Length: 454
Image: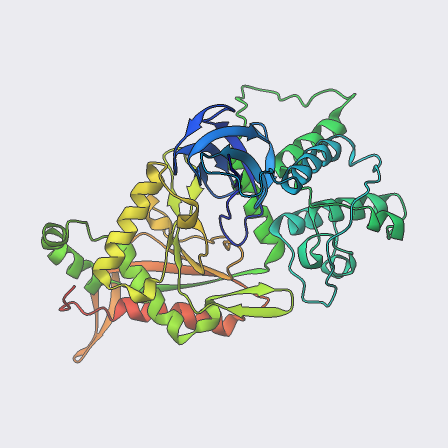
């Protein structure tokens, strides 16, 4: 019988690891093609992992709550097909067992001492402009490691990337007075050992508070533990503020024409297209037009390089019933007409609220829209959704008396007004570009054609 390896799937460019939440199958259980084998969680979404073969689960290599790197073998399935080589692959199991041993080692002893391991390092690439994972940048921020120091750390990951183990070792050496690891230690370093950042922080808190009295609170209080998603959101927000120097610009727009048009067509639109027309696809439509005029807004930063994205994938921040936040993505928004945008927006919003989003539904976004007005706010100062460089917030639409220009002179009229705000990464977007782009979006909304067809 042949054996098929089930690996941790890739779930987005910035996702390097996932946590196992639940196994639906155990060794000896039969499994069909595409049948759910386990549930996993990343810092963006929870999802199910299906089987890539039909057969019997022969081996499960990780336990619930284990943090596993993308691409690692997590289970094996015996199929009915004949094994061509009459031999099960040995290398994946060796790597998996090594990972498990090292994972246990890092969790227990990374703050004290390091045991040498007889493994060869990955090839290193120290040519500058290096990629650093969000997890490594987050640890560097917490430990006060500058970007200059990061560039000098010898990486043991793929293509010389700095891994979590590398940065933790560097911090340990720095605290002990040694800024460089010995050549022998470098040669004995092994594979990446990603450790759940939440567990790491909990261990650090426990180590600090061990032997001391727990924090006490006076008065009538209620203590609520953050759930897993809230912890990850908090971590993501703090990291974004550290990575990107945030600047926020504000403007306002007269959206009377847009409001009147929507009120006129919304019943016919829903009857004809089978979906509701909200303001969100209208906002996305205006944003896409302006991104085409100012493509630098649709980019990311990699060291000293600016990566301009040709695909326009608009993320829309969505509040979940639990109160947490998720950002599903409308892919290739520039290739959709208004009807297509409306259907996509409503579909991903419904999937988010019903916990049906897939990993690909929340990955590869290039620009984010958040509607703070849906909860009554006039405006907001949103935090950039890494690795993007800008996020636009639209406030509540309110009727206000404003001065309008007419052929017969100025007059005061009741208009539907809305504030817009955009936070952008000042490393590559200066105030002139940020303000110009935001004003362009406002102009698109103000000049909305009230006689258009959808």
